[in-house]
Image (tube, rainbow, N blue to C red; front, top):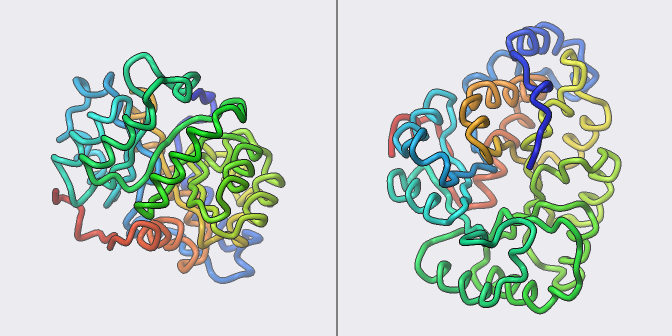
Length: 300
C-alpha cells in the first residue's frame, strides 16, 4: 500500500474551511450539515492494522490511548502476522473487532494465495480466536486458478456469518460475487485508485457490498471547501454502506493518526447529522452487532 505524503498536510485549514463553508455546500440541500458538532461523534475505525514493526514503537497501551485521544471508540483490526491483532484484542477486547489477515511467514499481499495449506491456516486461526472477518487481503491481479481456495474462504466466512475484507479493483469483487452471490464483502479503500464513477457503479450493482473509505478522505474532501461532487453522490446514495478508516499499514500512519482522524471528521462535518452518524459509527454497529459509544473512550 502506498499513498502520496504530499496529500496529507496539516488539516487545520481544511477543518476551518469545511466548518465555515459547510452551510454553502451543495450537500446542504439534503439537510443542515452537522458542522462543528462532528467532534462529539464516536468513531469506528474500519481499517486498522497492527503489524509487527509497530509493536515496539507503539505498544498496545499506546494504540488505545491514540484511539481515546481521537474519539475512536472501536476499530476493525487485521495484522501481519495475526498475532498483532490478538495482542490488541486481548488488551482491549471491548474496543477491538478482530479480523484474520492471511499474511504470515514469507507470504504477503502478492503471493498469499499460493501458500500450501492456507485454507487450513485460516480455519485453525478462526477456530482459535473470535475473528469477525477474513482480510484485509489483496487481489492485485485476478487469477481464476485460485478459485478453489476462494471457494473455501467464502465457505469459512459463510459458516461464521463474517465478512471478507477485500483490497482490489472492481473485477475481483465481481468475481467473488459470481462464486457466491451472498458473500459478505467490505471493499477496502472503496477500491483505492478506482475512479468515483466506477465505485458508484459497483456499489449500485451489489446492494450488500460495504466499503471503507480509508485513504480516500482527501478525494472525498475535494477542494477542502465542499465535498467532491462525484463522491457526494456516492456518500448520499450509499450512506448505509460506508465506514471510515485509517489504514495504519506502516508506522508513518500511526505517527499521523491524529491528522488522519481529523481529516475524516472534516469531511463528515459537511454531512447532515443523520448521514455523518451512519458513516462515523452506526453502519459498523449494524455490520458487527456492536454498540459504539463515547462511553467506551478510556476503557478497555
